[in-house]
Length: 551
Image (cartoon, rainbow, N blue to C red; front, side, top):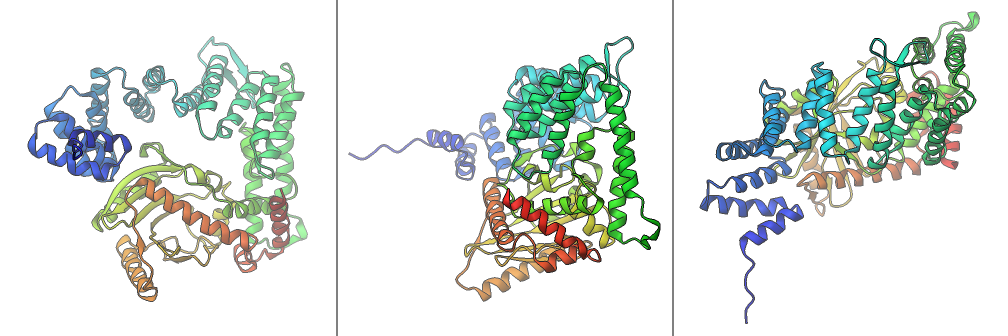
């Protein structure tokens, strides 16, 4: 007896549950050809198209859903998300989201999207109300709790008349209720996020602001237990733990102010050159600028942890060596990729401008938008969260765009850009296929800001920053053709979706990590090129690298 064929509907359900969108899409198209007015089929089709990076088609499918079923709340939410991703902000976006929550008040993502728009537009009370609704509906949203804690911490600096307050580190009064709210949300966020250390320092500081020093000490100890040996935050956390242990509620404000003033004076003294020192090198000026900047921040009342994090202990040369060694060490231990989907509007304007310009150029070259991400795995190497926009071509090619502002405390990027007399921010477009023989070809317009070669498995061509996407792509296509002609047994490994992109990036990182570790993290030539006339720092950097490697 022959087996009964599995019905198309059951096949479709199974493929959608498994996330096999490329296989599900033809079945949806067949069913829509038979029943073109079925809104659920258009809805599933929009989800498949969006997951495959075909955002324009996904938006068209969503608009068809709204035409057929205008009371479907999730369609209005997706229209807002897709239209913003494709066109940028538009006047009806807030209205679309308001309609979504009016149709379905339980739609937590719509409430959270409304909160971000309203906060960005300065409507803080409305934003907080929307975020409160989102978290009431989805209490497991750890990043949402952390976001509300951040807003509460910001609002604590603006206490209402007659409100119960506590003295801040710089003598300003802070709202006790807002600080307590931030503590509550941070405690909720910690077990729900992948990297709890990002928020545990914030929690400990808020507890110190409230005078709850014993609880702050506990949080610092948990942070220290989680940090790897040699991590640059360890000295800071240990110092902050000591302060929390010693401080009492009565003298906390005075002690913190006195310590901040003393440290600022020491930093300024270290930044002052000796009269007989002669003309100072660029590196000396950079180190002195860092120290003066830190002193000024201390006098303005900035968090001690934020000021001390990149500095460590010791004289200026030691501070510089510690920072450089830490970044070199991280170059050889890049973790697995963690691409966190994010809305572009939360990033600085210069990042959004570059992303929009790159998108137009890459679309003209046949690349489809895949999504906007915050590469959390690169957070230790970057000076701030960075908007990474990803693209795929129909042939399985990959393109990335990002803009960096490697300001303090991004020691290596800052040094390289300053020494090369380049701008403080740099926008990059990058193409990067993988071959099935384990090799990679990367073409970008990053210029010479990166002093470090990627190793024998990676062919890297960095053209000048002004190079257009079209010129980059021409060079990239030529290089790929040359490689395949020289290696006839090799073939390209195409990327079809986000999971494939992440897997490719992980293999790329593994190749670079292996190379960096095999050479002791930096060749003498690379280190000398980085340090320029301050080659006398090389021995100190090598010593710090040895300490990190041993740990």
